[in-house]
Length: 257
Ligand code: OOG
Ligand code: MG
Image (cartoon, rainbow, N blue to C red; front, side):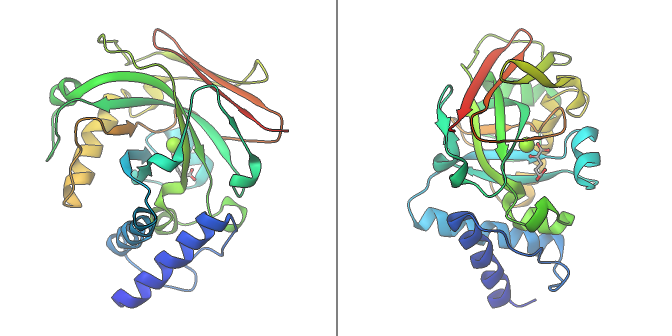
């Protein structure tokens, strides 16, 4: 596929994200490789940067079996976060900012030391300045939230929003923490941080590998979302959404009526 065709697909996805409309998955009509899917992702996010959005970190996707099974996808992906995607802890979002949003329980890392290549688990732990509970608001631009692996990579791994709780700077053992996501105070997803690659710091090891393969790096102050521990839940107007992560704290947001 030519550079111009990849650019055209990036524009299609950027417009869908910007105007909140669904598009058909790309792969049934357009054949592109995984590398080309990341090329489309980068080009589509570059259009956001050109409109003034600032890069703020990255997210991992499909780091848990639960998510792979829910979405029928078999391997890790990553996407890019911008400052415009951030929702303050406790804030209210409007459904009309999204196409068909879902939310999922995650853990966020705040990078303290530059990561410019592959790292070990120990180095991953040492590179993190703080940890926080996080809820990711995903929103595929594809009709019916249905896509192939390369489609979802091109669509920036369904990134659309994220809410981060208070950062904790003291080391916390995050290998196996209970995670409870509630809608209006009632649990809708209960899981463990162990569902994230057996240990969420592995998500950072993978992030370092994938980002460096792309010729990029993680900088101090960047945020990395480790990926969801459970399947995602669809949002609806009027909901109050909260996540409690054992020993790490809680985070919440509301959906306007
Ligand atoms: C893709 C994003 C996956 C995660 O945490 O696994 C993801 C999707 O499910 O639409 O963010
Ligand atoms: Mg996620």
